Amino acid sequence: MVAGLAILLLLGKVFWLDQANSLLVVHVADGRIPGIPAPPAGNFNNEIQLVGVQTELPNRLTLYWQALQLPTEAYRVSLTLLDAQGVPRQTVLNPNPGYTVTSNWAAGQLVRDEYTLSLPDEAPAGYSVQLSLLRSDSEAWLPLVDQRGEATVVIARLKQPPPETAVPSHAQSIGTQFGEGIVLSYADVPDTVVQDEPLDMTLYWQAVGPIAEDYTVFVHLLTPDGEFAAGQDGQPRQGLYPTSFWEEGEMVADGRSWLADVPPGDYQLQVGLYLLSTGQRLPVTGPRSELGDRVLLYTITVLP
Image 1 (spheres, helix red, strand yellow):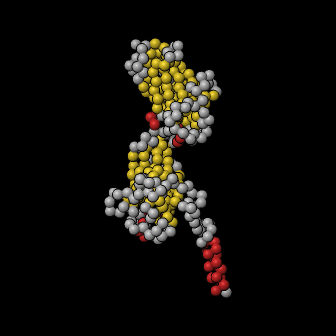
Image 2 (cartoon, rainbow, N blue to C red):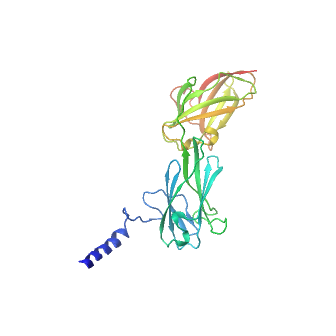
Image 3 (cartoon, rainbow, N blue to C red):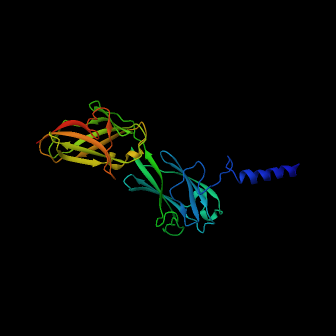
């Protein structure tokens, strides 16, 4: 009876646990773990492969490693947090991924490796996480076989979402929609500005759908007859919270300050969004959409 039970357990291991995914065992297929996102690259020197990355906003990561062969060193995991302008804000070095050293991993072994990163306090802000493996006794990087010439790979995006936004009572309601996912809900713009002093304004954007691209905002001053006089272009929040990070329902207060070098007089203020790589503007619909690809906001008087 005991022998029969042992045979059943052995058959269950061979035909179920060793072959199929279950609550007890997960198998890698084609360099991926079913149900877990795979990074764009992750084969380090044909020794260790990153086969999956799970992200839990705002700041948690779970990495899934597999030893392709017996690792020759105790490699260190390096995670660098970059802001949306590409500036490094934090680096975490871990000599014990999965609470062990890589030189102890067996060939084929899967390792779960968890991290909680400390994000800067400013919000809203978007970040990317760059990963590399360092050798045990130097700062030399282990090369990526599947990303020739590189030793680092961006594996995740994290974010500090916008806080609850209080729109000032004097801000004007706009309600113009840009493309499928962005609405300019309000604008707080002064009626007058003194020449050679900054023009300060705040645009209140709201995400109403998925946004795949990073759009650039343009703000133009036009003369009364429609001629371009001055302009300012830039991503929302000085590029620190690009539109591709926005989630449906978020409102983003986009403060802008620029020195409009124009003669005294009256100027029309218009705002739009475009894709920097192509120059293509987003079409507008709803209120104030008569211009097709931009919205006319106010007339501003520049005083001497």
